[in-house]
Each structure stands twice: as structure tokens, then as C-alpha cells.
Length: 74
Image (cartoon, rainbow, N blue to C red; front, side, top):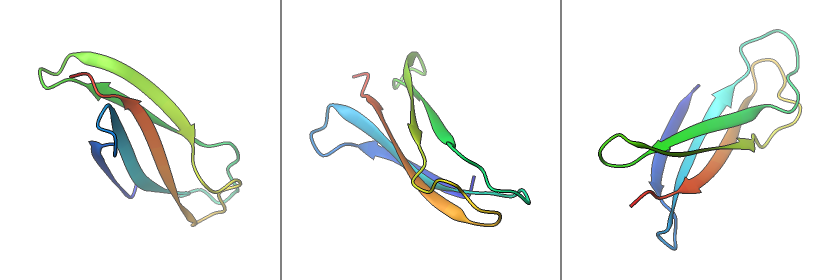
């Protein structure tokens, strides 16, 4: 994981997790999924969701952005 951030979506009813991941192996990775777990303000589980990262395959040393959208929980 290289970096990430979470913010309300434009419409406000979803949370959007965005970030970057780097392939630290010496071989290409295929069909890599980013997994996000969303909690409410009381740290109660709301939902989890996945999304494929942008680059496929992700080559050795390469960094790819990702975006996962989940329910807001409010």
C-alpha cells in the first residue's frame, strides 16, 4: 500500500476510498482487488466492498491507482 484516502462521494450517500498500490514482487500480478471495509462514526461495521485496481497486469515495481465505493452508514 502506497497511500489512500476516504471521502464522501459527490452525491453524499456513499464513501469513496481511493489510493495506490505498488507491486513489490518480481513477477506480474493479475486481477488484483482492493478491499475496503467501511465503519460508521461509532466504529460499527457498515459494509465492505471490492474493486479491481486500474492496471492489469500490475508489473513488478509498478504502482496502480484504485477506487472502492461503499455505503455511507449515516
